[in-house]
Image 1 (cartoon, rainbow, N blue to C red):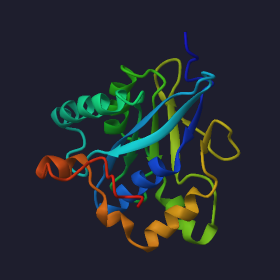
Image 2: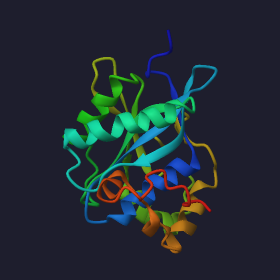
Image 3: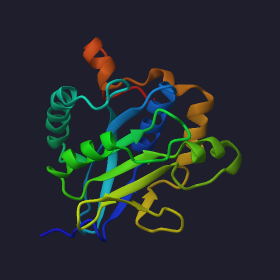
Image 4: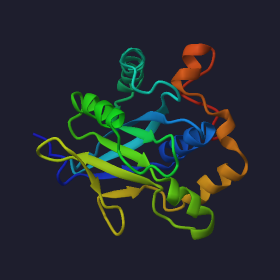
Length: 206
């Protein structure tokens, strides 16, 4: 019996974090989404988010696309001892901070396979402010399901439940933003259009 998501910590790796934020910057006028890849920590008290896969930048709510992509992603990473452990969502409008129906539905879908799944929602206000603020905390909000299966925001300020693994992640992110590194991001939409494009983005951090 693992611990419930009520007391689990969520730790986000720099590479997963940067990949997701860059994906949203690559499609500034549309909603984008992705899945979080990781594992439960050996001590059973944390979800370690080691990687991420950018999914779509159009028709986010279409189930057929999800039903093609999720098993492929799960199959690839399970061979490495990793699973889909959550969902990432960036709203279309930068002033929209609500976790919407599509995001909740996909989050619920992932919870069927990984009950402690989290949703990361991009906080555009924090992302905008990052250039000036030099803040070290993530520009995403973390949501987890409570006992009655409702998605609840986990307050990030001064919270030990959600953290970036590398304290310098935002500095690297700003560097990548300034060099327009987002232009090279491939998501599942791109891959379905042209299968030579690799959704694993192997060259991104070179």
